[in-house]
Length: 210
Image (tube, rainbow, N blue to C red):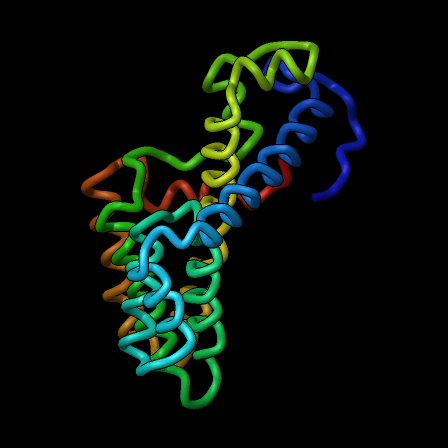
């Protein structure tokens, strides 16, 4: 996270507080993930985790998708694995894996991951929520730790999908663009179902810092 040089006021909250709360939200999100994965709440989750590193391609993709569906915020690593599979597939021999991984990401988004509105960057949340304050503790209390984690994950997800579309763009420019048309069509169907949550959330601006 790049340091913010200016200490001005952004949306009624100083840049310093916005950055400090981002760092705190990141810490809380990491703690939640650690607790989630160490709790051993179900043998099914343990089984799925094992399947992500073994089994057939279909088994691994299914396991990753099920983990993401069970708790997206706590399974960002699974989303990163799918994106990594898509990126590696640009080389020889990985085309099938890459396109299926991209398809899993899009299917999750269209099938329930989409919030039905544009995703927001971290600093934009303060203005939307009408948060104001001069003291970090007061601002944190006004938001609440649970909401901080939600905002952090939404910021992460917006930047994540921007990078996914960059991967998809490379495929469009390759000598094998046809399957990507189907994947892109799924994004556009999402745009039709949720006019405020289609492609625009990711392409409306270059990813920025908190």
